Amino acid sequence: MQIAPGAVAFMLVGLPDKAVAESRERVRAALIASGLALPAKRITVNLAPADLPKEGSHYDLPIALAVMGAIGALPADALAGYCVLGELALDGTITPVAGVLPAAMAANARGLGLICPAATGPEAAWAGGDMDVLAPRSLIQLANHFKGSQVMARPEPAVAAATGPLPDLRDIKGQEGAKRALEIAAAGGHNLLFNGPPGAGKSMLAARLPSILPPLSPRELLEVSMIQSVAGELKEGALSNRRPFRQPHHSASMAALVGGGINARPGEASLAHGGVLFLDELPEFSAQVLDSLRQPMETGEVMIARANPRKTY
Ligand SMILES: Nc1ncnc2c1ncn2[C@@H]1O[C@H](COP(=O)(O)OP(=O)(O)OP(=O)(O)O)[C@@H](O)[C@H]1O
Ligand SMILES: [Mg+2]
Image (cartoon, rainbow, N blue to C red; front, top):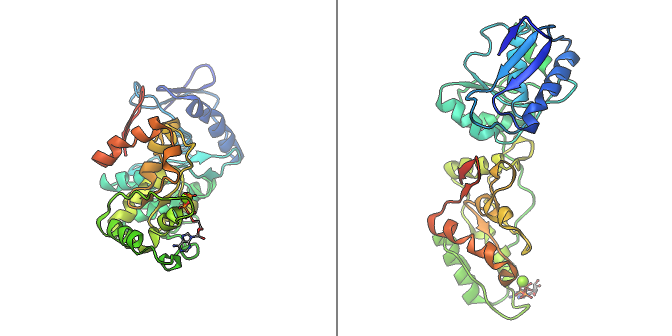
């Protein structure tokens, strides 16, 4: 970032997409709301590397902090050693973004700290016990922290409270063969196909599979949570220690099932990682959608290749 004399402008270069380009307006408004005027100079923000397209709203906070550093609203060396992500509201508050947990783990692996939105602090805190995590509510709170006038505490890692009991296998009368099949599938992590007349209890049996699965190991908990974090499905930044149970409707598209769309989001198959992907009314799914599950079932991985992002879940 550079502030130079010249025509007054706030330029953003480095292949920003629409959401990133609009970040200029949010940054400007948030700084004004925080009592910081932009200098009447030419400000150029370069998102390096310049040939890699940037998408998403999480660049707001790093851009704003770079400007604050350049105009002296933050101590010059305050930001060294931090990875930063977050979106800004017009009033200078910092709003949550997806993907904070993987960002925190990558930052920790490189020996960096993390500055992220307050709501995602509990998620970031999982990345490492001794990692420096700052989760401010607003630009002002962060500025006060660095000035030393109001030091923020490190967020605590949070686990979501279990939401009620799971459907129980004991509800099923008889069907000893089907129940044994469920137990074997649960113990061995096998795929399972129930075939039978209407009302035989197929849906009921399948819905009870989560109740006999073992709890997530700490490593699995992080894996499952990273996928949920990227998909923006972690509520209040709290991780869930329940195995996922995903039940997409048979009208689900290929992108919904195996991933894709904006940001090459993970699909139901990836969101079911470590848990159960339940396709009720299997024959009703389109053949193309079912075929797209073949590669993930064989390799355990989903690869989404589009023009630019190529991601493996
Ligand atoms: N073994 C069983 N024990 C207790 N209740 C059962 C049993 N089998 C079926 N039921 C009852 O019948 C209802 C219908 O079962 P379910 O919806 O699971 O059938 P299904 O095999 O999925 O049928 P469909 O092919 O129409 O989807 C269940 O909600 C449950 O109330
Ligand atoms: Mg059914």
